[in-house]
Image (cartoon, rainbow, N blue to C red):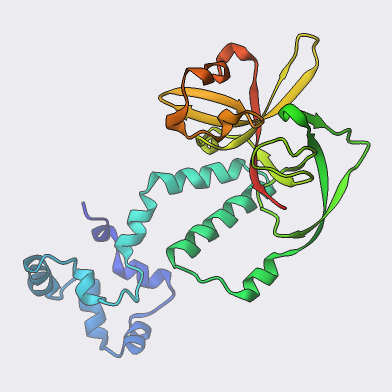
Length: 269
């Protein structure tokens, strides 16, 4: 059944606190017209609907050709979209910062949909001066050092900070592909939905002595095979179709012990 037929027009008017005379005055029609509408005694079903059907149009496209009114059918359709309901449910389980991240992402999607142009004023508002706390250092052989929380290590930064970053890491080597000495990068927690082939990740595991070790890798997913390729390796610069038997030693297997915990959100400078 069409959901519109479930609407009691008289009850709808009363719920809005309007009398028939109030509504008639507002629309510049007679009370009798309002009564006919509420009792559905107009002739739209004998004229408009057959006309719309004959020219293969939604009746609302005739009534509201410029889309100035949010069609009730559109609202019903949005309410029926599972993903919208699921987003609402997930947000109830999120903490404050994560909810803010979802909101910022949705704003970006809306700006993209509306083709919002970038202005100098917008850019100035986004950029600022910050003291970034460095929690990890990258050394030769892609090895990552975790800094002691008691020894705060800050670096000055002028620019835009991504909303979704959780930590900052600095490279203390120029032998890691794609990154320069002293370059700082923003990290975010790893998630399966963010694991695109080619993303740079931080993976860690316990070594034979029970010590936690971590390295920077390029993640690759080719023909249902996953790779963790050290950034100091020339193989990290290869395209997916160039990976061969030489890279078999980098295949990521369940029993390797490596756990991907972070990924590089974006470099800063």
